[in-house]
Length: 308
Image 1 (cartoon, rainbow, N blue to C red):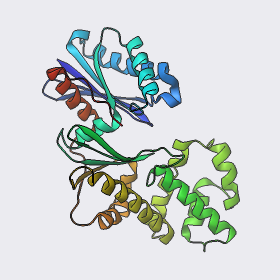
Image 2: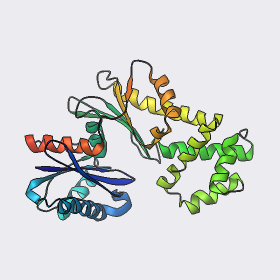
Image 3: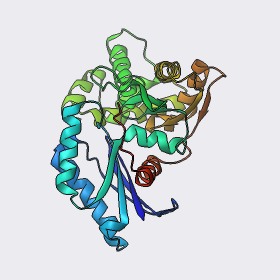
Image 4: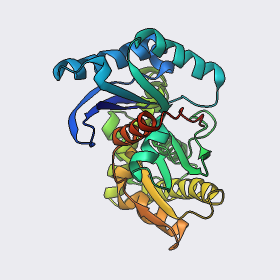
């Protein structure tokens, strides 16, 4: 039996083909298939194209492959869950598969199916764990009302800081000119048109601006470093909220683009959490986590748990 583990988040879709023993055969990447961006049918079509490529590349029959979908947005909202299930059912007739939330796949991969807390800070943010088969989470409320410490939140804080430097509410630091230079703008007021028109006020596009905060931090800018500290505090509170509900679990795996900032986010995060917490990189990828969940379900015939 072959397994396809899929990590379908808000920015990309990653599909990995594994052997029975968990050996990676091939990984392919596709654009995001999030239903809020491409619709439910569009989601299923992107997934089907990726799955077809893998099984055709390796001449695998439908009876010899089991698919595990780790999908962003697949959670407690019954209407959304039903729409996703229906779209997959329409496209994947004859396939064997299971469906989980992408966060559960990431958690499973981070600890190879064992216990722990996963802290995700990418475009959005969430902390997540399992306790006695119960899904525990903190955060993940979306960019409009939450996602503190995420790349979007960090980028928005950076933009707010630069606009305050523009009109005199804050003293200018090197961050001000650095951002304007990187965006080819003359002053902070032009950020209005840049965000609304050039970026279309689009979440992922705004989140991508966080890279310029990292550059400013590398130059030693105090405002940039302060924003990272604030983000770390928000992320630490997510972890602590989950830890209280999982018998004081202290093992935490971090995952997501925000952590590419390295010590600027990790050092203050460690300080806010304290020495009793153990921060670590994930042991395996979310795709491998989806493989673990798929194999477990295939071998035990257990239904996927309702999560989030």
